[in-house]
Amino acid sequence: MLTIAGDPGLDPRQGFLLHAPDGFLTVPVAAVMWALTLMILAIAVRLSNRSFDERAVPLLGVMAAFIFAAQMFNFQVIGGTSGHLLGGVLAAVLLGPWAATIAMACVVAVQALVFQDGGLVVLGANIFNMGVIGTLGGFWLYRLIAGLLGGEAKGRLPAAGVAAWVSVVAGAVAMAIQLAVSGTTPLEVTLPAMVGVHALIGIGEAVITIAALAFIGATRADLFDMRSSRAQA
Image (cartoon, rainbow, N blue to C red):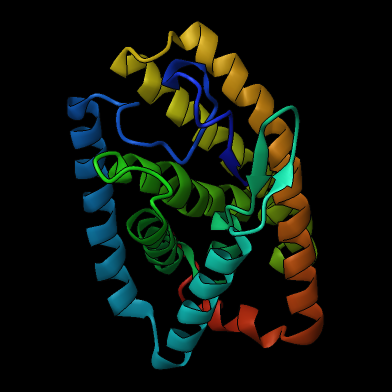
């Protein structure tokens, strides 16, 4: 889930957010996040080109469109905070982690460029927090838990649920650290606030991820087989 948190009129130092607008991070921090994100995306493009077959290209587009549309629907969490589907783990389970990273980067970039949902200077940080952590980190955790539960066929849903929850909290932790390094808000203030809110939002992320995968498993289980040949992160 992605937080649209706090009143837009509040001082940036008071909000909880993953869709960071410009001005929340310093230019050096934003530049470092851009460099890191571009490096990861370059690796993702290269590895996806090696392993992504033509049959899966439509699935990539459909998944990106689904996540983009699903993120338009927000739900209230507490106070003035709302959340919506993040979708990194869901995309990674279906597409593989590298292709999912590309899809998520496109979704976050379009939201910033077309809907002004997040700043352009901090776009690298937003893509990393919402599109890289959930896909690469989330998929690694998903595979680990699924393996402990006897494989993907048996452990897909619980593993995806846990990984989806962790991906949201991990993104919040990353944002809190970036805000602290930028001098926007002290870590001891931001971290508990971010983690507390996103721990709740992560529950919704886990429920939606499990429900979507269960539906796909019941109606189009063959989509999981399409990813099997490129499932290694």
